[in-house]
Length: 280
Ligand code: GUN
Image 1 (cartoon, rainbow, N blue to C red):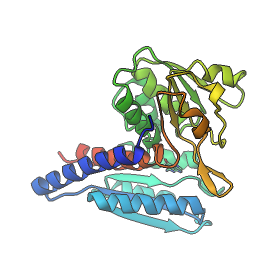
Image 2: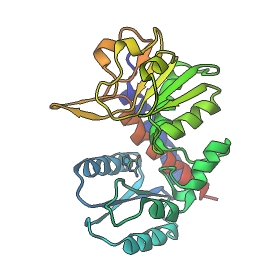
Image 3: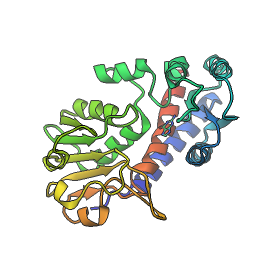
């Protein structure tokens, strides 16, 4: 089975749109998302344009603030403080990567955790790790929602994650632990990566290496979630060799059209949650 991320994303975005209309009718208020984009890194420009378009479509007031690549850290921090204090701003997202003169750590720490729609602030990271209410990073949240469409009860499943990033691997592990999976996080120094992957009931590939996972790396009947977005010649491919793996597994996400569309939908979901938390 091929998991249709586009379709699931459309369903979720429709639910969000309806909820925003319903709240607007009662309160005359709508959520606001401000994205800060620094420099001219082409993929970031595309991602931000997409976030803006999707936000507007569900009725979120989207605002993009652009800076040149040589903006000072001080100027960006000042803007974030202003946004933290702006009651019309429900969510703040600073698009990564950042230029060298700007500290990612300082930027992430400066965002009000209750407006941190990326879920990158240590307060949200810590709350997620402790099993408390947290804003969850959009990509792993999207992966979990897709997984749960295939398998409602993940308890006791052996989950293997390739990649240990703060964006994907680590929060994914926390989410799967909460679902009572047995979780293994693998990375570039893992010995016998193939053998580790072949034990997985659920395999999450989030490593950024085109077509890394081959047919003999995956277990019969497993579920494969491919987070990779890699340029391969003139094509975009995932971290999994989709064509050779797809007939061996129970379900797999394609690239494109799998996790990517869910990430955007989850950003809208997080923005709505941040907005609702401020309504009272
Ligand atoms: N750059 C690539 N992915 C992301 C993301 O999820 N959030 C932010 N802020 N920047 C990114």
